[in-house]
Image (cartoon, rainbow, N blue to C red; front, side, top):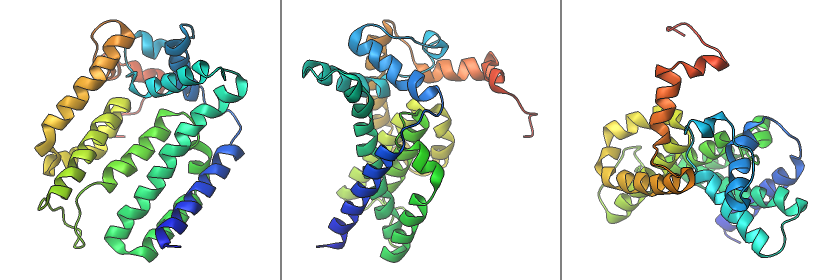
Length: 252
């Protein structure tokens, strides 16, 4: 058995236990930001919160769950058990891949030993264990940020390099993930801005295509043209909507 196969089995085992152990309710957003919109898309009814009424969220992520709900219903399995555990299947797959990419990323930078230790320490974080299996946008953001960073073309000297077709492919993947995670969680842009200034601007055409694809989804789901990230900025910064959840002085 190779080291990679051994690691994959550990990742699958850990995330399987993770998904079945976490059975509690945490915050409303794990339903209002994903499952309720997905249910309405799949079955035509469901409650949408003010975020959707103001066009602040993209439908891209809920559409994935809506597609799964539709498959479950088509197969005649639309019962309580499948409605509970089918979304967990998606979060399970995403978190497994993110764990794998975390290991590969650190392995490239520091070697097998540090990569294994990093993954172990990450797994020992109880809050990620508590939140990752949930359908929170924050959980998706965490996984996508890890995946996006792991595809950056970094050499063994910790330098970004664009010297081969593989590196360009990896950078294109990173650009797509960067765009998606920013559209899903606009505040993620703060993580990616320094990287964009350095080299992600090279793949602006990839971001434009990704933005167009997501915009088509939002147009079909909302019924009118909308760019949620613009509405998000306008609502929170110009209309002061973010103050509803608390505010701090400018120097905070």
